Length: 345
Image (cartoon, rainbow, N blue to C red; front, side, top):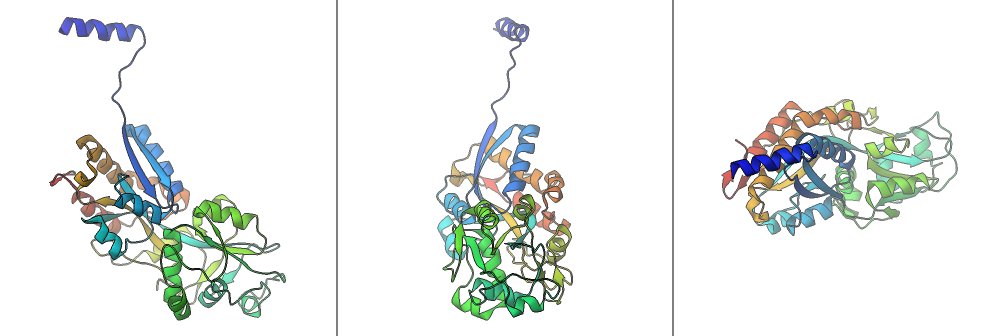
């Protein structure tokens, strides 16, 4: 038998045939906010470990729904799961932070490439109370800019979105009218505006609509060479969204589960519309009927994402996890089990 096997292997070598183990395939779905980063991470990890990830960039709401229906191995969200969603899960779902990002306010205004916006201006524009770019309140905080007499066209998400949750969470903190009339959530009953699907769809609408304004994840504005506004923070400073200003916003004490909002930061130079983004995993992967090799492959990949994978974060204009956030994420990953046994040692 051994002699026969040796002959087969030798023949294969002569013929140039190689035998490789089948790659593990994982399925995830959710946030468009970190999609450019996740796409790069998953491709890089496949080259390293031959673990293939099919990630569906369908929005945080869709990712949570697929996780709850147990059709994916992991979800992804820019918003903490709501209590009702956690109850539907049946068991604990861990929120594993992967990076920090920013909702940028982008616009398409002929002749204008930069502007300052105060919290009250942002709220009133998206409430539909300020309708023209030559409004005196906009001019007051931008005295050196000549704004055209042009209608403001609000563009927002049409799908369930963590990007929307971050933006509405910020607006609830700075506007009592927004909180009472609209509120926070992944999907909203918008007072005004036209909808686009995903950060990609919103970016596309803004580019083709003069006079438009929208919120998108920063990388989408940068990737499409779209201008973004500086936003006044709690300290009164107008702050441009960047890796540094997002990192300053994230410099807070974290709970063990990392389920925290960092919008409307009190950091002096922090950008006020910043947030974590999370990978969502069940506490015990046996609820997904995952095999041992699949569970180990996924947990090793997530461990890599919060360590070596962080080298990919800054080049794509996200802010890397702080040492404190990495430590919290490590604790969460070590608690994940398969059939009651911890996967990572």
